Image (cartoon, rainbow, N blue to C red; front, side, top):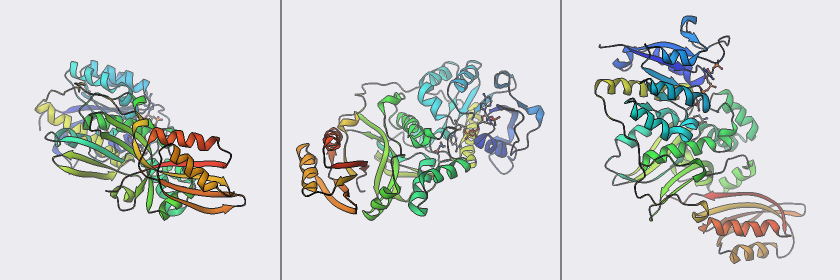
Length: 429
Ligand code: NAP
Ligand code: HSE
């Protein structure tokens, strides 16, 4: 069977425990997995009870010494955070060890430097689990789309927010209850604000777009981000009545001038669109590429088992390449015209606001939208509450900057009682 390959695991939480379960029960899986030895596991707190059986001789709180162990050839980092794993991964690469990580927060900030370090040390860094959990999407994009030019990647890339929005829609569960469930199921980040504020999806679309468009990782501040915390149950219900589901979508869309539109925000998705039917912690990404056309990747986007599946597959792929090495490439930006500012994006909008129920109120808002070049598809008055009328408005395609200036004027006007939500609408098809 050839030489045995020593692996160090850093982190034994949701994902790390899933990795141990696979490594310790390799029978019936890839033959190369049977030559992998789990040398040791680093944790933060040795006294914590564990869900997997690991002898105390293989557990340590000293991740650095474990990484430096000469028996270790591959380091799996599933501890989370940014600065600590950054230092540990740097050290591993400098020592000539291969690295597998599920850490999108780290890669989105230090990935370019770590890829270059890996290349300089002739080792691999793999991160399939960092985007869409158990769905193989990065490696297929790298290896099976080589004959294609990708034009867009649009998808649901965060399981926690999709779980929350699904529970709000299907069970009328309050946002906070749905979040607590997602946390107890092991989907959420250690600090769940990373999920609900859209940071996790922002990091993932940074990584996904760099692979799809074969570019260096973008800076995170080039990616417009909006989370789901402003979405109310009322919005979910109105969206359903209008024929939409609300999803947190990540967009990476190549424009005709070569610029790339990167953004993350809640979106009204038409019920006929396949992304509207991606529920719970599932993720999906729709890729448009020439000449293949449209391909959708769909599957479990979070959770211990699915994510560990992607992590261990990366380990197996490293083992395969140890036998037949391939020089890894680091993307370089050549003649790239840059990213599209959010103000230049054109999209439809759903707007919900509460207005004083006075004569001329609809005409007042209609005039403001018209003055800013925003054309309305429909405007409906819902459930008048005492003196306040709730207006639900759908616009035609409009430039984001014009919409923002219209909303600024509306916010300052006397007819507005409360501005509730503005959600972009995904085109059909
Ligand atoms: P988790 O359940 O919080 O587990 C983190 C583990 O890392 C714990 O075992 C913790 O030790 C250990 N750890 C923390 N600091 C450490 C240190 N300084 N030295 C050694 N060990 C340390 O997290 P998780 O959900 O498994 O996520 C891990 C990573 O995978 C994150 O980067 C996350 O973004 C990514 N990811 C998670 C999922 C998912 O569905 N959960 C999916 C894709 C990617 P103790 O147990 O002793 O506290
Ligand atoms: N917190 C992340 C999510 C884990 O909910 O998608 C998977 O990356």
